[in-house]
Image (tube, rainbow, N blue to C red; front, side, top):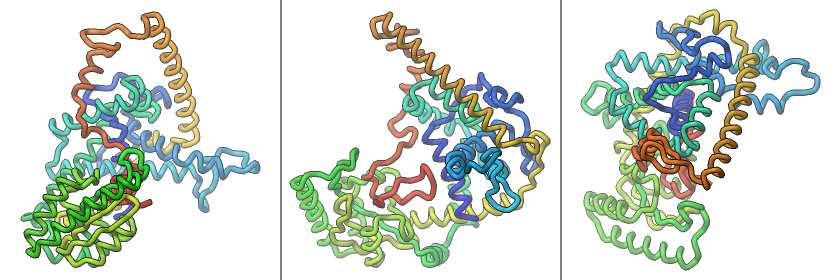
Length: 440
């Protein structure tokens, strides 16, 4: 159950962050009404008395149906006279039933987390909204602009404000994670807790200095001459560390050299190192870490990414504590979901996945047609104006004032992008859109 909760929260929140589907303004459109004929605010069911609206639920249903559609279509046979959603996936359960329930579990999870966060005094505040606004500016640019952003939201049957509400749950979850298990609080892990957790779950922890032998953007191998230079530099760094005998001085010097020289693009996000289990790192990295005692450094460790110098950490270090905290909250979350009281409405009970997906598919076709027509019109305008749209309200290149402001407010650390092969220090993903993997 804990692993399932981690996957559900991870994949959904990664999608929210990667797509940047957050906005501070109200929604001027209601894709649920366009698709289903009733408002997005229509209640589908309640979770411990909290309403789950149509746009909150249908967003998850659209995701689940999209994921299943291609697989089910491939399984469909000529003998099947009905819809793919009517196919039995197990005795007495159709594909549509399974998808409908899976989407409901997502919605229940998010509602429960939001409710518990509120009860514990955690909130989605101004600073949180400001941070997401910065990510939104970059995400819109990556998606192709304001219209593309809005089209994507509509295609997933949710408004911008509706998705902000859904996505804010991830922030609340992080606030609980940081607050409920702080050192000094009753829920905080003791050293004995961490040591037992690491032993029971085969958790290793390490920092490393990485010098890449591949291009960080393309993943292409460097030339032999360049790789030799990297190896020589790694050997020089290792010699500096091997000259130190005092453990405290060794870790201090390791951090200094790591921060100054490591080419691991995950370093900024994980300055305290990595906690991982079997199979989450490239094999050379895992094997070298296992061969060390806490506080020891490795020799040069070569992997497909380059040369590593590894410092194994104590099982009571910050990365292991973070993993323990996540495990504890995931356990609680699983219990909250299992204990939740869910009461469905007639709208939910009468909902057919096949009917919904047919309507959504038709709606998406109209969105695509509208988008293509807009592109053609824009192309004609560019041609008529010599290839450049006229500036509006002091902006250039046809940007509106809102577009220009969003672009200016975007930060370099906005919506997370997929990490390249060079993200050697990070763990393999537990979910789609999670952390990048150093595994080949």
